[in-house]
Length: 157
Ligand SMILES: O=c1ccn([C@H]2C[C@H](O)[C@@H](COP(=O)(O)OP(=O)(O)OP(=O)(O)O)O2)c(=O)[nH]1
Ligand SMILES: [Mg+2]
Image (cartoon, rainbow, N blue to C red):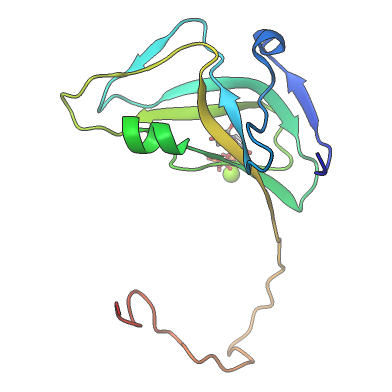
């Protein structure tokens, strides 16, 4: 409700039964993505991430918007299911399937993580994007209080 409309293709018809990715609460920031798998997968700790389709394609089609694929907090924090690319970036001009790199970040020797078809296993948030042009200069025009101080230059307390 209230957001811009963007085109979505349903690539996996099971989403018509499971329900499209959607906001789970009235003010949720992200939609949950469903694992469009043929069969359950188990991802072992230390194994390469599994590339899993969300079953949808989008054409955001607006350079002022992108989407980010993020872990779900409960799965990431409690179970160790995060993303092989840490964060997925969906460009406004990408029209292929939205894929999720599912990675078990747990220590070797711990049990595998199981993802079943239709599981809500990751989430996606739409974000505004600025695309500045660069003005190449020899010296910055305005003074900066911080200057080049970084990487802990302000201390800890
Ligand atoms: O988790 C992700 C990350 C990316 N993508 C898709 C959408 C994105 O627009 C495209 C390219 O992603 P990105 O620019 O991050 O990857 P790249 O390695 O730079 O690939 P490219 O050269 O295609 O831009 O891949 C996904 O489906 N899932
Ligand atoms: Mg890229």
